[in-house]
Image (cartoon, rainbow, N blue to C red; front, side):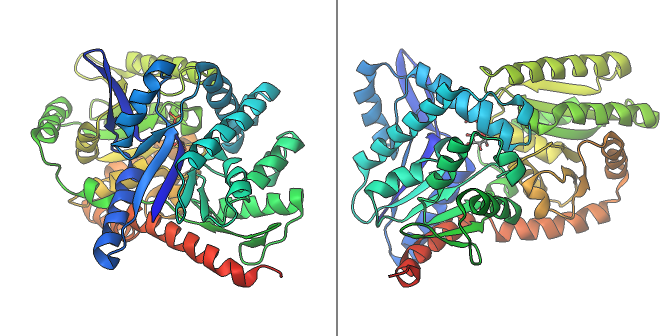
Length: 480
Ligand code: G6P
């Protein structure tokens, strides 16, 4: 039995070494969770499931290099989908990140409803279908991931009527009022596209309910306890809150890099309380609200000046989309303004990095920070919040989390704030910095217990088990 995982990006980083293109497996949570789950299957049931990941290799590969790249990647359990720059421009930057991403994150005014983007989205989903058909064998299971590939389940279903197909959406599914802003034909086809799957998973019950509501209003499909009888097969819709690789964040990494990073940070922060902020650069992450909240905190709590530092890591992302460039300028200006206004010769209120941070250095920051300030305006889940809590081996530390993040549903012991309320951000910072250690520990203990119990291994295992069950049950539930 094999599991075919299909996502826009492969979990690999392409690097040039001595004029050659080398690919290294990235340390993403989904990869490690799935590998651990598949290993556990092997040891507990002697069932041998391997996986193949199908997706875009992260760069445009010239035609003549494609066979070589394909063979290199097949040793890493990956099968590349090659896409031209033009296709990526209209599909990835266009339809995915100028229509679906802003709309599903409640930024309807950022959308650009260009029909060429839609045509390219349809075409690229068909390219992915062909890539799956090229590698599929009898008995395989397919698991499609995220908003780039919402047409893929039904494109595959047409060709593979009996194959178990699962789909998981990593971003929010919006309320019907937002969803119906999509031109009707597109919105219709996307819902039908998703319904090609046997199981459709979301991070929260709310997103699942919104999806069911849209299928009822737009396609007229009723559901019974999340089960829809689509034209020819049963579809189950359910919530699977994604977990993290708990042990990886909770244990001390091997190798000297982590220890070195920790020492460096200790020296840098010498005696200051540290507030941590880590995100991909995205307007949905509420980074400027966060900075405004921090500014208000310093204004209203002058006793904390020269006592506290905001360690802000922003990871470059989607630089080809204008709203991301605007956001970057806005952040740069705000950081400059706050540092210029409050800073002294001995103290810089914000230490700001605009670059990718390797896991070891991220982990050192989690361990060294007294507070994590996570304030998205809208976020499907937010795994950083979970990683911060898991990494606090002595159970101290305070998480401040936006109620607009899917993770807030599971991390109710954090200080939950509305990210549009600057007074609430400033107030939560004050409360977090003054919180007694016993209370910090009490809150984190409960959250750690929950995160450990439902980690990414459990998450992927539950999804796959449920997918196989739905596929099995449908022979009993389908009308004759
Ligand atoms: C979100 C999406 C992922 C995506 C990631 C990075 O988490 O749900 O599918 O891979 O952002 O975005 P990028 O555009 O760089 O792939």
